[in-house]
Image (cartoon, rainbow, N blue to C red):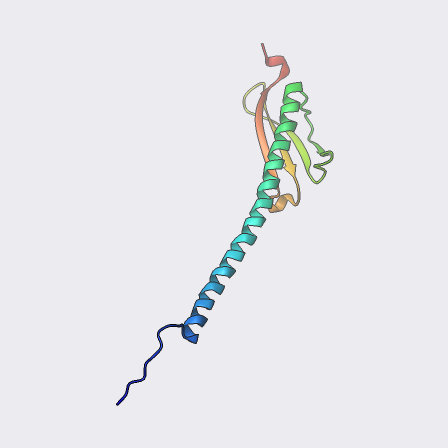
Length: 128
């Protein structure tokens, strides 16, 4: 009896299909990660811009001593017109000290599309 030689120089169709399935699953996962990365990049960009804009408003107002007792809300000028800000002054239990809060909003505040910065300030007359 003569044995037939089995070729061991190639891949079977089943091996190729399994390899393609593994590559397809990996590729779909990588595409999902890329999409998530792009979404996070946009969120981080808004958070960074909002934080810097809020610090600018707070530093200007504290340096000038111009913190009104009533809340104030305005829109930023171009190129940041999609952002608005709200400045609030709150009393504290300490005499002569008040809390200054700046909230920068770029979308729906209820969906966490806002950044709030806070600082404390002495009344102008209390500084020696």
